[in-house]
Length: 139
Image 1: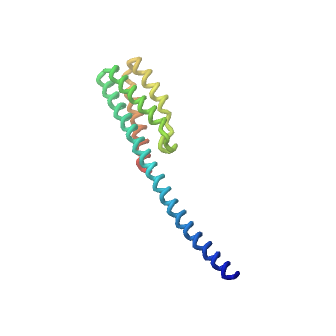
Image 2: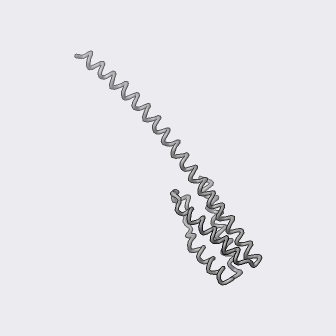
Image 3: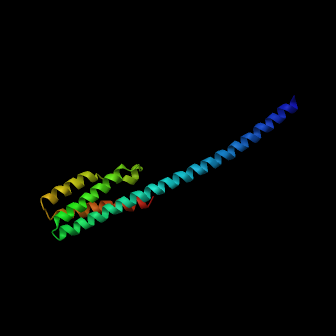
């Protein structure tokens, strides 16, 4: 009876060691997958934010030239890309805390009024996007 208990104890020990090794391997694979997903999400977010920033700078140049129609088109493009960015399943720290819709609405209103001071608002929003890009790149 003692030998049977000894063999069973040894089997339990072997199974526990194998389970521990498998758990360690699973944890490593899980962390690698999580890291890859975060990197992919960050790259996607940066793509949309860079596109928004480009549209904002083009809109600013258009306002500088007095071409408010072109500026409206660029702001519409920026608004669309910000909408897509906001809908991405990203961690809160990657999305930022800025309320982009309020800024875009204010800019659109000033563009309709053909207000040349709108260029400052456009550049301020572009600066906010730059800050968000810089902070998401550091993580």
